[in-house]
Image 1 (spheres, one colour):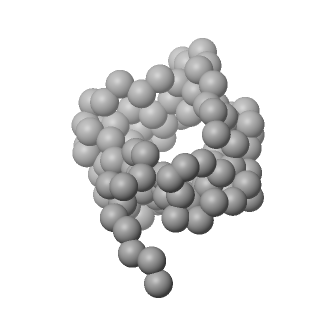
Image 2 (cartoon, rainbow, N blue to C red):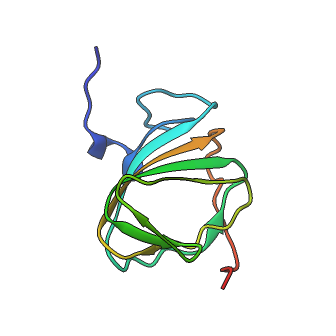
Image 3 (spheres, helix red, strand yellow):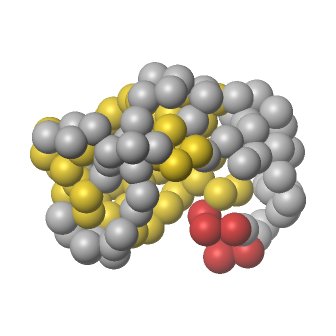
Length: 109
């Protein structure tokens, strides 16, 4: 058994095709990410799927208010336009694992 701490990994990403990783794989990425209320996060998209579980906090995305307990998925090339209404903790699963697969985009509104 190996034991590490989440803070050992870059921004909370601990599974994927990058270093350091608890499990290195090209199939998917997993991270537990934190965002502060009002944090400026640019509109962006990925070329794969992104599945999110909002552990705590509140996010506005696509004119929808997401609350703790919500699962939301972004399709490939779908633009994310998050507004962090509270401090948030999110579990993110992306497939496949492609480091650098984050592209700045024009915000939808």
